[in-house]
Length: 534
Image (cartoon, rainbow, N blue to C red):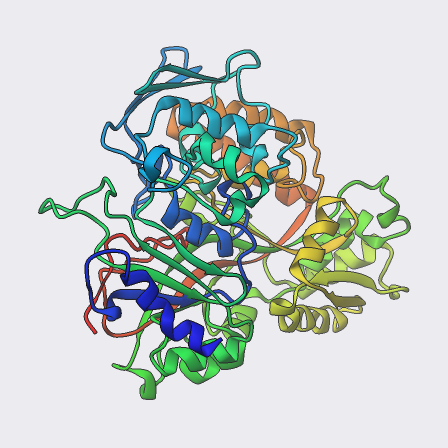
């Protein structure tokens, strides 16, 4: 395997002009990558390489503004039921054997229609199908008016739709590739992005090379990307990843692991003295809420006889957590206490006066007494979590134990937990919700009663919430819409389907020679303007 990793940069560079091997951006993906099909880009491990290979009609910039990408412009109809896109004329798919002569053809509106229709196809069973669920015109949702004009038709006004189209799920693919590669399309991606697949040895390394015909240029007219390629390794152990970074075999580490976080950061989230000037610490707010979810379907046998059915018990759980202490000691200040509701504050266009659950042991005891469980719980409530959060789960369990609340953490692989929550088989579980697009509606969709799981893993179903949600997504006035969002936060707080823990923060280590890298609050990997000076 070591030999393979050493020769891969040579493989990349053998296919086009000579270039120094140091111009390859290297990172590790400890979770592994199971597919490069954008219709299955449900987690960050897949989103990162997919977003290098594919492009969407719209992208989100560093300031959370929508800007054209494959589309050069768009317009909404007067009734807000149709969005018409004019496509760029200089976009070509990567060269690939699926095209005549192996030469990538020009992007057409029919490709957008095919990609979106495929995403919705029940036979594909894409986890991203929910993005169009109950939102499109039933007869003609997508129309290719000509080769350069695509139209999306809605069943009712839904202003966040433009943001949705920036998601990796909505990447544009050519039908030829799916037809020819079939089930193997997952490992034979054909896109229009700044990089294209060169080599993928599963569980060993994945190599992308520069797309020489990528359509974007910088301010001087130089064609992007600057890098010659991207190399992804798959060391499962975070300790190995850290060692590779220290030995300059990786250019970046994302999300500092607890196993070495204390060695690098102070409790205040700053670099320790012996690391200053040796690495770059990159941080910014991350539009991700880490929370504990509670199944709200009291008829489900999983909740039979469970104290989780009690609203007062759920409030007691909430008030028992000192979130500031949790973030300081368990996260080295990487994050912010989630005391302002479910939606991260940065998602709103202006600050709203949202009251979350404060740490208050007196109130916690009051609610516990009202719940009827003050004298103990037998058997303990199960809290399902994943290995990366085992310490957090144990910390919370100890906090609750001091209140007389018995919670027993059960750690399992992430895939297993996703399966349980998708099938409503977990009563109490660790969860997180990362902004897919720049609108608070994305977070509120987690509680919309008509949504399946994902995203409604708690099966929260409140007619009042659904009514306000429907008004909010159609409201064009920012001030009025924020008022409706505030009302939805109040309904969530009243029902307690979740226990928000912290609003996350992007924290990455970069080698000093990486230039032009800019983090973003969705923690999407954007490499097309990155350079290396070593």
